[in-house]
Image 1 (tube, rainbow, N blue to C red):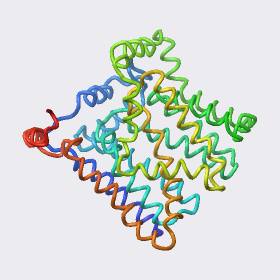
Image 2 (image 1 turned 60 degrees about the vertical axis):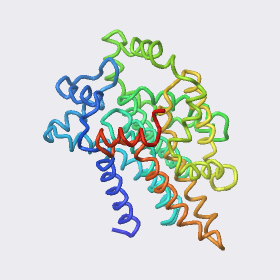
Image 3 (image 1 turned 90 degrees about the horizontal axis):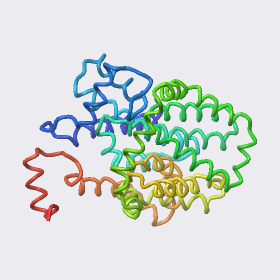
Image 4 (image 1 turned 180 degrees about the horizontal axis):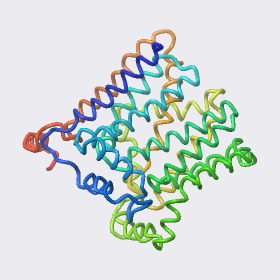
Length: 356
C-alpha cells in the first residue's frame, strides 16, 4: 500500500479501538440497542419508528454470533467509513499528509465517538449524508455524471435508514439554487440519480402505503411529546460543541469557499449548511440531527489550513493543530463518556460539581 493508505489504515484502527475504550464493561447495552437488535427476528421493509436498514445490520450481528463485540463494531466501522470518505475527498484535491491527518484526527476525537458508541440508525445516517455530499463534490470536480447516480444510491439507502435525510435534500436544493451550480438542475442525469434513489426507497414507501403511513403518526408523537420541549436557541448553541476541539477546521472550511478560487464552485455547501440548519431550527429538531452535515467540511478546512501553515513560522502551528482535538477530547471525555465504572463516574461528577 502507499504511505497514505498505511496512515489511513492506522487511523481506522484507532477509531474502532477508541469506540471500545470509551465504554466501561460495567454498562449494559442501551435500551434502543435492544429494540434494534430484536428487529433481526422481525425482518420487514419498515417499522413504526424507523426504516429497515438497521434491522439488516441486526441480522448480520445475529449471524456473527449476537455478541456485544459485534453490536459495538458495526457503528464503529460505519464511523470509520465516514473518515475514509473525508480522507478520499482530500486525496482527490491533492491534499498532503498533514491535511489528511488533521481531518482524520479532528473527526476521530469528536462527538462522532458518542454517536458511534451506540447501535442506532445515527451512524449510518452520518455516513450516508457524507457520501451524498462527497458524490456531489466529485461531480462538480470531474463533471462525470456517474457521481449523480452514486448520489442517488446515497439518498436511497439514507432514506431506508432514517427519514432524516429528507432535510438534507431540501437543504441541498436551496444551497444549489442560490449558487451558479444551479445549472445541475438542467442535467437530466440528476433526475436519473433521483430515480435510482426512488427505486431503492420504493419498498419502504410501499410498506408505508400498505400500513397507512405509520411514519406520520410517529412524527406527530415525536413532535407532540419530544420536539415541542426543544429550545431553538439551544439547538444552535449546541452545534459547536459537537466538534469543540476541531471547530477551527470546520470554520476554515467555510472560509475557504470564499477565499480559495479553486473551492468557489463548492460554495453551495456553505448555503446548504445554513439552509439545513434553518429548517431544523424551524421544526425544533434535536441538535444531533445535524451532525451529518459537518464531516465533508473537514476536507476543505484541512486543505486550507495545510496551505496557511505551509511556510514561515506558521508551520510550527502544525503540531498544535494536530494535538488540540486530542487534548480537548481527553479533557472532556470523563464528562461525556462512560469510561469509568458507574460508581467512579458518580464520584467524579460530584467532585467536579457537575450535578450542583
